[in-house]
Length: 111
Image 1: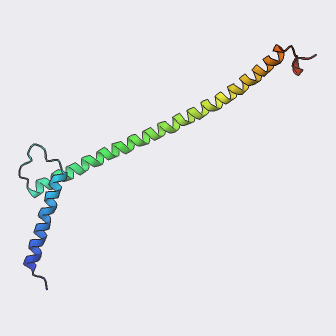
Image 2 (image 1 turned 60 degrees about the horizontal axis):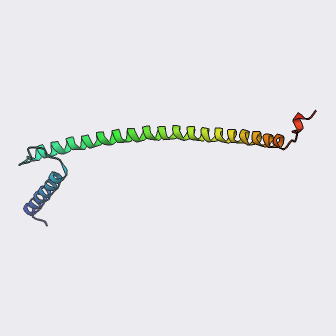
């Protein structure tokens, strides 16, 4: 059977170790001297809330940028289709010109 006093000392030692690790993760500000467990946990909670807020804003910005990217992609595709249409009109016009440049009459103009 385990001795309750040893178990209790072990738990306290583990708690101290965890609190020391937490001190390394949480910005303690100007009063970085000795903190009570309560003040350290309070600062940790506030820090976590701040990080969650930053994450929320970052996710919102990512969503906005993704929407903008989709919009710009659609515009680019539209412009690409427009360019193909203009290129095909331009190539048919230039082939008509080349017929007339050679002195040939296009079929639709022969009467």
